[in-house]
Image (cartoon, rainbow, N blue to C red; front, side, top):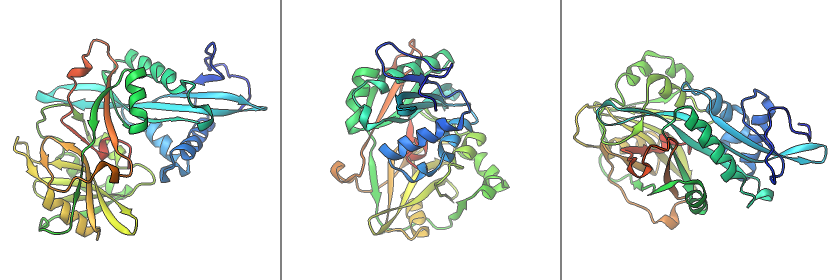
Length: 336
């Protein structure tokens, strides 16, 4: 890119460089954002622009709100900071619905820290999403960033995501079916049947609304392999991981398929999925108002990256202290 700001850029007094909003389809925007994320927050998904294109441009609920802070370097430019939130629909008690958002990919180049780039572009994004009728935004942050987003950006801390480890000792659920989620499976009657069954149970707080289109898009995330495990009363979405030499089953989502209020114990179903993966153990992070998981809570110091759940209102008329989530699990965020 040129070292001069383009027409769509915004220059702020006293701030190095300029901001662009990502509304352009210039492929260089996502190339630079992917490279910055891979530099500062390495992840296998940041091998190409495929992940960001999927996350920001293919969401059936609409495009993400993006900000990219560019600074001049020699005859060109450098991406100094990047942040986005993407549309999300929530469902709540009694059939209530709310159009909100999910926060992701907040990153600042290590050579441009403490310039308040993130806090400034974040507030710009929140204002834009608010003007589009969005109610509230949910995110997760690490220990290092939690204090800053609460102090400077108006977020409320819900608390650390609980983590449970399920070991191999004990009975697994019999009669479960297991399948790899592939593009062919997502276009099959099997997916249509699943989408018509899950996420229909009553809830006591807000949950991500997994309509068929949203669920199909979420399970088509590039660079991640997903699996589905089904029984008569519960559906699991999992992926494979490892802890050093030990293979692990990561439980990303638990969907109860009943329409009653009684909580379902998913532990045996998790063990069945774990054995399908030939894993040494299973990991479940988050909480689910309709499900129980029995396992061991590892000490926070042994968790590779403890995460804090945070919430912020976008509509100023909403009391963010009153926003309550019924369920929040790995599939509801962007860890996998």
